[in-house]
Length: 394
Ligand code: ADP
Ligand code: MG
Image (cartoon, rainbow, N blue to C red; front, top):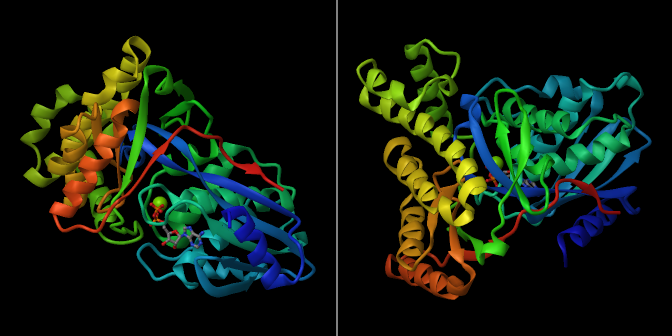
């Protein structure tokens, strides 16, 4: 069954009726620019074909019920209780189970955009994810985007894609309590076939950047290590705090304001760990800019080394890689990938490899063999092409 059919079937099972519509939003891969978003820097992600579907319809009462193929649990709250449930204090356990805080947090964040919140109908929302969850491909932005698109229509809010991305981020930060940046939501909401999204996370100005992989005989392989991560916990928050500390020591609003040439001076001002966190962000921002330039001037074959340098920086300086991700990257490179890196927030999830279409079987074999030799569970391998943003499917 497709994810769209699964959402429709679940809606029917829960409500006994058909949904008013089905909305969907994609996951994403990040080509380059990791952890730069909350440092107000640059990113270059693209939306992937895998999508999360929300089958939804209005209710006569003022209650919102969310269900997901992810779990047997249905969670129902009154619209008037949303303000009491959210926001959770940072780091606090959400008042509803974590998964339900994503869609209900979106509803809560949308209330602020409703001219007359007292007149809004209740909602039934049934979710099904075609994006692997916790794989670094942003199932979180996909569930937020699908839910936000559904509610935007059912509540007749008329909000644009950037506002809906900000709503998704607010839900993730304040309702779920995951201190993530804006990249994932923007990548999902502004996705386009054939292009990546070059985004300045300070101004939120973005533009599509054609990749031309197919014309150059290339493809992007995703290696899902199946090592799950959750960004609402631990390491992600710590990295964010290190970046804030570094910016404070350097007297700048955000690490976006530090240039590669400033790093020598920075090294003497802070402890080694903070400095290495800073160096990752500063060099990564530069690599994003260099990647955009290289794509325009020399085409996609020229970006491989930048991708690989990004991985080394995340592994050694930012320390967010995992043994499975390093094995995936090394195996892909030794089988002839032009470049490879982990993608997403880290501590597990997926790696990407830019490969010649002709060598795709060899690279896949090399990765599978390296995982087996290391005693890791078999990875999940598939290619992705840039894809469309949110839409109403039915
Ligand atoms: P990623 O975004 O890389 O997949 P996150 O930790 O950011 O990983 O988000 C994953 C979390 O999002 C899941 O643990 C779950 O709480 C929630 N989630 C995502 N998709 C769904 C879904 N279809 N149904 C219920 N919860 C979902
Ligand atoms: Mg996520």
